[in-house]
Amino acid sequence: MANVPSQPYVSLEDFWAAEETSETRHEWLDGIVYDMSRGSIEHGRLTAAITIELGNALKGKCTVYGPEVMLYIAETRFCTYADANVVWGPAETFRVAKLGDALTNPSVLVEVLSDSTEQYDRGEKFAHYMRMPSVREYVLVSQHERRIEVFRRPEYGRWFHEVAQAGESLTLHGEKISVDSVYANLYPPQKY
Image 1: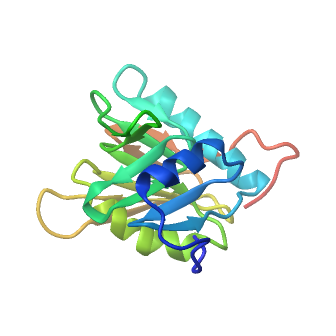
Image 2: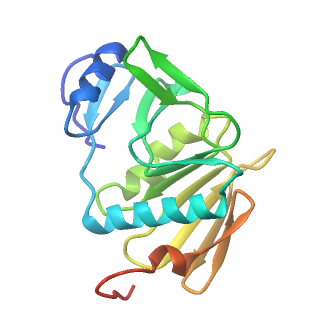
């Protein structure tokens, strides 16, 4: 997320109308619109890979959504996009007039880290995500090494942090995901 707003105060309705026809994505934070950075080819490949792995592992248990689904965090008046998200049970949404819906109850949120967004994804964006009562797991996928981190919300206290690297697996929403399977299918093969 850029540090400079792209324009002065914008209502949520005006933001949503503009976002529907925009060729780029933006975030809205209580009336301020921010440009989102573009992802690299590797970012897109890893986003697709983790989304596919989650979809296969959680098939019939949850609904997995890709990066085009907007999220609305009422607690902080924030609209954004995650690289992937999972909803357990029926999707709950926030509707802005007839402009569309934003998801409000993801249980798992995934971000593929990039040099330009890693600090934001680990800090300010995570702080927004933590305010969503439905979020149980926050997943960070590295672009520079075979490494996936999971932050888990406990019933009480501090979030737990787990790291899995090459050759290891981790549990997401009760199902095992192999780190190597997320980083597989590269052509030409790459080493991390």
